[in-house]
Image (cartoon, rainbow, N blue to C red; front, side, top):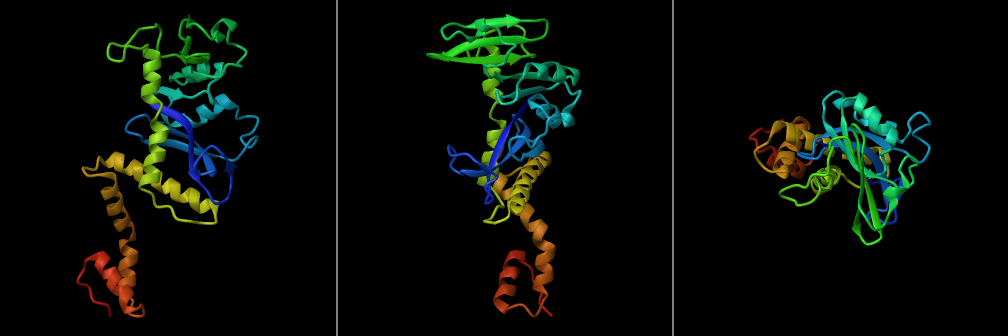
Length: 261
């Protein structure tokens, strides 16, 4: 199962201002990732309202991100930022299923689904629309092309369509958490550098998943960082013009018996 949502990471440039977030100035990216084990498939940077162009309507944002998984018969989980009725047919043509929440002001939604005091469901040949009330005076609309009945899960004791959404909705948040916990970022005045470092963190996470490394994330990333910098360290170690203290520090990192010329 795949998840498609927004990913936020700090920026010095103030590309987007979100006062409700701990890092108020952020870069916002659209990202497609596994709900587990959190492999990142595709990313593109959101540069502000109107910058995605008239040809890239909300439903086409998902089409753009889902190109790596076309014809794979997978399911995509989205929040209400993305889902429109037109998207259902578009993903079906790509042989992809869809589960997610919807905003209430979409014109195709019947008024019966907007009730604040009862659960309502509707079915077509290949789409299920569900309106449920998890809290008082709060209606949540969910759509699915993967579920075709209102079955209740034996383990969760809630509707399968709701349980599936809750199970697969946290992929992007987990990727963001892992990248912030074990990151290569540093303070910079250039948003391009901040973006590059975050992409480097996501690439490192992907490498950890693909290689099926037998130890922890941080051990893998330390070993990876050492391999990436080893050649440059060896060049600096044999440079006799460097201060002795610096060469000794490099030697401790390399753990080698090489002697400078």
